[in-house]
Length: 397
Image (cartoon, rainbow, N blue to C red; front, side, top):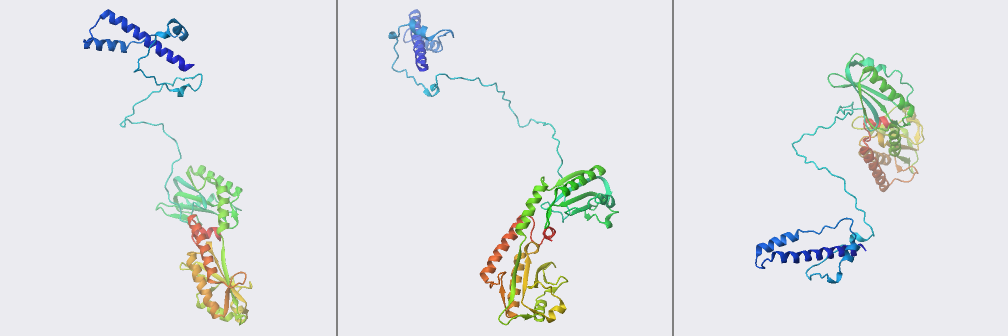
């Protein structure tokens, strides 16, 4: 129906224009060779439009004229897009007025000031780690001595996690807030709560008490506080504890007596000392790393601690080599050294190198252990807790 109405309006307009052109030609009687008059006539009638009042009905217009007299020239072509007439009615909404302003690059725009907490790039004590600790860094308006800064720690007892307190002196050196530092004036202070250790994640009570202490310090000293660490300490602590449980592994294997039977404690002690192992008070022989840390230890397979007098008179069934991955610096190299030492001692004692199930430990099994060790080492390093690092020692001791 809509398509038919459009065609009828076009036909009516064409017919009216044709009728007016004939009347005008009779009045002017212009010569066909008059190019000026032809151009003038074309300009006039190309811009002439038939005005139809909005109240006029298309049916009345059609009934008033005989459509048989209407003829369309061959050169007229009508192209009608039917895409907009899929529905009987089309609602056209007026677009809102849009104001476009031209912006020049040399115009200065002054935005409203935004109030936010300033961020300071301040160093922390080396022993503080944002991946393990929740730290409150204080900017003191006036210097405070170590004694006053230590007083805030008096009420923090029976906590399930340690707190580390430091002061920054005028020479920009961090010092632990110990009794020796009570007279020193500090311009900054930091208080850090460790969020996890081998006993588990920090408790909500300990966290609340630590946060209350920070609030008290800030109020008493009129200090500005910058929190460094996670925004969700309890959730972070739980995740950290889970990670620590996954990587807290001990590698162990044994030298077991062979066909010749048990080996003497005296012979074992001589071999241990020859390989640089030292007997400690806990009854184990320890190997040292290059930095003096304990690399691995050797204990009695029968869980009877070693002693100097005991080794003189005992015959040993076997000994166990143990290495805690998280506590061992350069753990892959340390593992290789431990394997070489164990193989050498087993050969000297006519014994066999075996696993926890007392099955012979082949080179293929040793390589499998080495690959698992490397994986844990990478995981810890990516986490920001390299094996054997100071922060690892805090978490796993």
